[in-house]
Image (cartoon, one colour):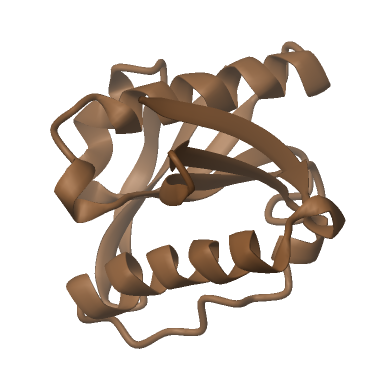
Length: 148
């Protein structure tokens, strides 16, 4: 069973930081064959959503408050589920948990994301709509999406 928690950077344990970076690297760098700078300086200011099964981090996302990624919008990023755990609704539970936490922190805010294009329907199911045309980010097709 997956349990989700919310932590600020300074409250993460060394093991959690390691496991978060390992999961993000496993999926975004190795699996997607994309060499990019994952550690971008935003983690120190992010709200970290960690999905654990026992002691293992199997899902993760970060919430970025206004002014970090977008001047007027809160954002969700680095949404990831361990490959062997996909297809079990963990991603949906993770995103619902993020949206619930955002509503507690800053209710009635527009959320803006940069989503990988192939996940458009996933985000549509959670109330996000596409903005404009697609673009490449680190050589992977992306789209801007918002949820009001």
